[in-house]
View 1 (cartoon, one colour):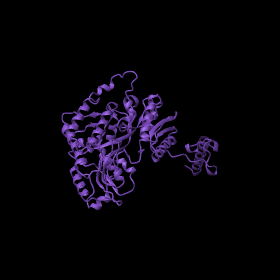
View 2 (tube, rainbow, N blue to C red):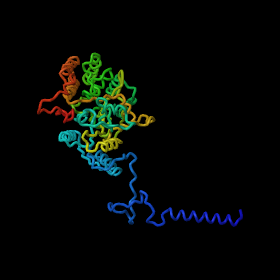
View 3 (tube, helix red, strand yellow):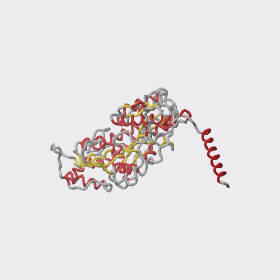
View 4 (cartoon, rainbow, N blue to C red):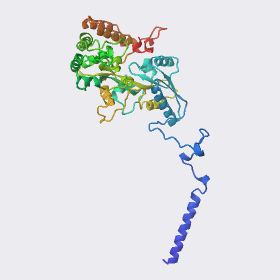
Length: 465
């Protein structure tokens, strides 16, 4: 092809391309389409410094997709920094989704239980509420709460805490487990190695005796107790489980099972021995009071208490490990979770909010229910999750609250009365159990006489009776 024809061909091709671009693409600023970051900003808030628009907020990585709608009402208990953490989470949800989460926060759990009960009783329940697994904070899970769906990485035992008749009634958020605290300075003074996961109750008794023989005192000349223990139904339940059979796990009582007598009597004898026959144990606290006051003052070397107690301790050298073991290992867990009301104004959005709030603990000292990395080692979080795997999850229903209170009182009296025999006490427990609704659970579902409130006992914490 002659060079002249080739040149004409390329000129025509160039002209065609120019015409295509001219008629196809925008030619003025007004015709240029806007991206998301170029959309006009609303009149409020005002532009930032120098008249430039404020950049859009980067969405929270766990922010769910929530359709537009009215505000979601949330009820919980928290105080101080815990309340601030919860408010920040609610604000993040609002900023990320555009759906406002209105918080009602009570300063303590007892007040919260009453307010929550009143909200449901009046027919104006919150969309989302924080509940405890021990008795669902006084609510009837099958009547008051919708089914939930926890995150896939949630510890299975915490999910079991909120599972009733095969249905999950809350999204687990945080938990606390009973552990063995120890004062490192006291063990250094005694020249004794720190407690570890291999300790048995026999080892702990020997160590406590050895530390007691040293008669250590603090700087003020006050004696230091080697051991500080609870004397209540929960602790007895742990000991029963480690010996072979729990007294209560989830909603099932095992006090009159044919093969439980030996383990339950052994647990009573152990409590009586430590408190009444040895001189190494601090005096028991009153029913309803948790031990730990002496440990916080560095006047006891060992303490069995819930792991969240660490949040209230002053700064000194202490640590915790698993509770000593017997034939098997056991602990006791308290789990909090976010539940959606069965009569929520927007169930779909409420479920998303519940899952969002369950990403981190609300209360200081509590552990998140998401499993830690496998290489977490002996960190407090890893120890708590290991304890959770074999922890009891006692569920106190309205009909059995008085039985649990009775057991608390009797075991506390056992720790204070050296003349009390365990056989006589166990016979009294058996007699009381036979009269309890726990022995006849179907009675709870019978129609109630008009004018009576079948849930009156659920409006207050168990330990307030």
